[in-house]
Amino acid sequence: MVSQVTVALYVFRRSWSGEKRLLQTAILLFVIGIVRSVQKPWRLKNASISGMVASCSPSTRREQGSFASFWECCTFIVGTELSDSRRQEEAAEEKDIPLEKFVRVPLRCVLQAKLASDEKKAEKLASSSMEMYAYRLLVDISTPYSSRIKILQLFMALDCQHAHFVSEFSISLLFGELYTKIKMIISGLGLCLHLLLPFLTLASIILFSTSHKYHDYNATDVKLTYILFCCTLPLDFLLLLLGPAIAGFGFVKVSQYSLLSFHARKKRPTTLMKLATVVCCKDHVNMHCYIKHGPSDSSSTIAELVLGYVNDGWKGYIHDAASYKIFNNHRGEWTLKKHRLGHAKRLGWSLKMAFDRSVLLWHIATDLCFHHQSTTPRGQECAVQSRVISNYMAYLLSVRPEMLMLGTRKGIFMVACDDVELMLGSELATDVRGLAQVILLKAQQLPSSHASNIGALVPNACRLAKALMDLQDEHVRWEVIQGVWVEMLCYSASRCRGYLHAKNMNEGPELLSQVWILLSFMGMETSADRYQKSEPPETKEEEEVEAGDVGGEGRPIQHEITIRV
Image 1 (cartoon, one colour):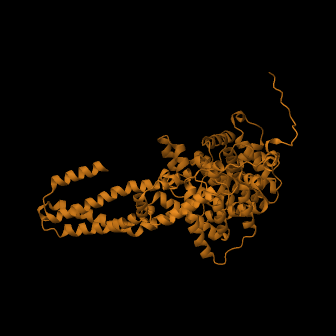
Image 2 (cartoon, rainbow, N blue to C red):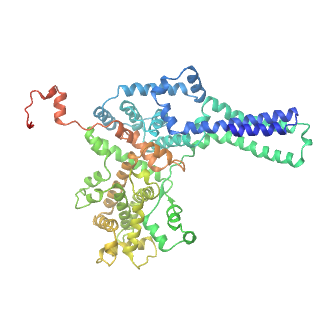
């Protein structure tokens, strides 16, 4: 930046004619250019994760002097409120309550929760209270349990519609702070500059147009200067008017991807796929250029399912710290247990494997059940939300594996696709439904000559689909599938770091990020809690020691260790 300013000053000095109005115009333009050059690193610093972590650090705040405090007031319009909030969080952290006590309070809160009479007022209060909490979530800083209880009490006063709005507002806020100018605009200094710069541009145009010596220059140069001015001024005023509104751009994406559709395009390539084959990037185009999006109400419907799942967990499963930890580790087991399908010989085996394999297994099985010839139109209506979550999880596995789970192997998607091709052999299907029925038919036949080359994933998916189709009641079948997918979605969201949620918001917030926000607002364990507040359940011996039997006195020694000298 310094070198650019230096070169610009040198060029200006060499070409300056000495005319006063033109000099004033040039000075204004230089001021505008320098301010805009400074704004860019300022925005980058505000949006950096390291800067956000440093701003929440207690040691950083204590080391600040008078100038630093003044600068904070200038660069953040609510600096005093933010400092008070930080001090409260620090005090709460120093006097934090244990997990066992935290679990009891939200449990009473959920059981006794009543919807607020004034939903709009409660929504506004919840949004303002959760702003700082969402900020801490983004930088993976664990929030004290005492503060989370207050957030949960506010959140439980909202119905599903308003709770969804608060979560979307929080996501939009985080998106705005990371990928727009909103954080700079709401600061005192930033707001002044944002309002002032367009009028400085207007003043420079007026000075240039009233100059009496511009006719000494080449007419073409003068016209080009006017064109540049006329293009710059509308853009400046457009940013002035639309700048704050851009921060609300953060709509939640529910991207969709399907392994069967991926394979069908390989067998019956589109025009784009044929062109991609020529330049040897067929698989990349097939993977990234055919991503669809779910219905417009998908995010709100899935948010309602997640809220229902967590509410049921508080009411019917969580009763102490140990059950709280177990509930947060569910990825389909609770749903199978409720329907008495959790035995390993029935459906439990499908969850006792690596998470990425389990996701792909259930994704294929969900599509096979949906396209099964026994599935009625009524059953397909029940399957809508299950398939939306299934296709979204397949999208995460194939396109954003780092968000799905630590250690997710992106390659197993392509391996499964190759296994489908080996299983089908020379047979061709006209569409995805036909492809699913051929796969089910092939799985029932005797092993072919290629069976030794086929992995276990696709045959196991067919086995899972058969077990699901054996459930006679279609409504129960899709209730089981939907329940497993909701648990898997929550399991993945709670284990994704805030840094990864922030990184992948560059194209718009993900559904996984909204679920992550909802879970944390509802008192569920976050990745920061898992590593910063690890509290394994106490054993019986530890409880006896805490009760006063320190050192083991009064307790008989059950095992003696003999040491030979």
